[in-house]
Amino acid sequence: MQGVIEMANAILKIKQNIGIGIVGWLVMFAPSPSHALTVEEVPNPRKTDNGWVTDMADILSDRTENQLNQMISQLESDDGTEIAVVTVPETSPSASPKEFATKLFNYWKIGKADRDNGILFLISTSDRLAEIETGYGMEEILPDAKVGNIIDTQIIPKFKQNHFNEGTLAGTKKLIATVKTSADRQSAVTKVNPEEPELKFSSFPFTFPIILMMLPILLGLLFYFIHRSRKLFIEPNETRKRIEKDDNHLPIFCAKCKQKMQKVEDTEIQNLLSESEKIAQEIGSIKLESWKYSSCSQQPIIFIYTSDPSISVESIAHLSSSSSSNSSRSGISGGTSAGDISSGSSSGGASSGSSSDGASSGSSSGGASY
Image (cartoon, rainbow, N blue to C red):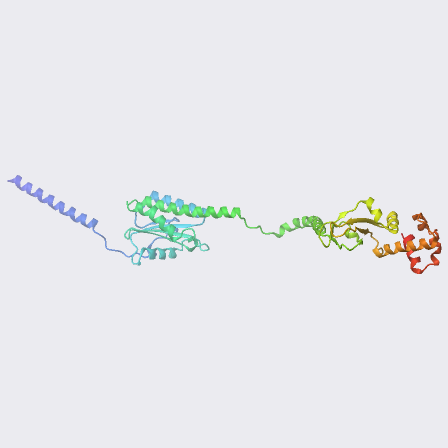
């Protein structure tokens, strides 16, 4: 009888323990009442431990948090971009996780103030959503389409398997890689097209002497090309032309056909010259050249080169006619030499007083002034 009583007590005790266990299990796993979370209640990791990760949902391991902090710190050091990774159990009373992310981003002022280059990676476990919020300075680097692709390909597939550590690391690594790629591309463009260096005043004393040294050379080259581009054009009806000293090296062209004229050999020139031209050339007062046209005229033209402004085509022609006239009146033969005329001992010179003033002037000009 005593054995039966002990067995009954044991059964009763077992039932009591089972009941207590069931109650405890129900208390432990019963859903807790919803607690509203505001952005002000989310700890800012920059202020708490100078990090970049806040895990309020307690889904990340310590190792993952350390990896995230190291990667983001390196990015911030290299590029200045700031990334905050935040997990929360819920985002109510905000209307949506997107609204909560925007409020938190603005409340923390993520990113540099002058560049607005912040990124917020938010994970809400009760909403089962991941949000990525960016500053205006990151819109070109991370447009909405690229952000959506990162979430769909790097984060969500791993979160669906409850691999929160792997999904959070993969998404953050992709964000950092995208930012670095853009920074490297911008650096390459800067190297290809560097900005013009500013001219500093301190370098001016060294530059000024170089400019002074180069100035004569530059002016000389400028004068050379200007002079080289000049041409001398002659009308086909001209037979004599006086050439100024500055123009005696210019190329000669026909004004009508624009063709370059051809120089006549010195041996052929003598047949084209008058006696006075021959005398003046022998004395050295003038230099004569003959050029012929390509097609516009068969008559060559005689060019008179001299530095004496008083000598003209008319004076040469006048000298020729005066010499011929005096020779006929005074009986000077064709063998009169240039020396006789130069010395004034010829009969032409003696009879100059009985000739007209014009003839006397012409004879003097032709014989003595040279």
